[in-house]
Image 1 (cartoon, rainbow, N blue to C red):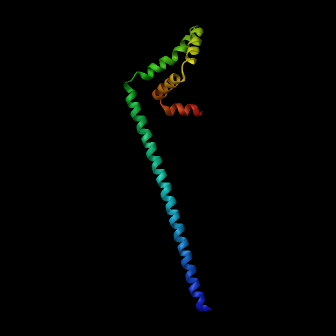
Image 2 (cartoon, rainbow, N blue to C red):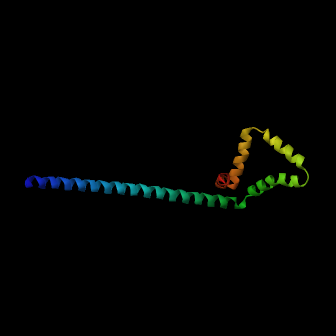
Image 3 (cartoon, rainbow, N blue to C red):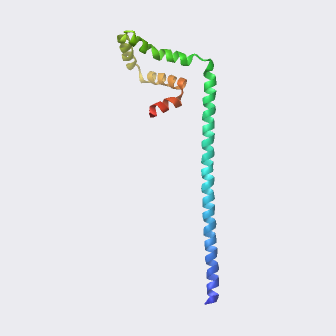
Length: 124
């Protein structure tokens, strides 16, 4: 009987050792996966920062942002100057514009002022 117990204990030890090695391998695989995701996130963040810096540098010598700001301010100025009827007619005319034109105007503003800023604004 004792001669039978020793081989069974040996098999049990081998089984437990194999289970332990499997668990260790699975843990290492999960760790590698988490580290890879973290590295991808770091690279994405670095790329977005680099893109934002490049766009900011490119717009330093541009009047585009100032022009769009003035353009957006015109209805405000006219409304305070007693020309509400002109502003109302203008917005009514814009409402009749085709959707592709309104989308194009939105894209121009998004490209100028930054898509990220617009998406942050809409999330609020």
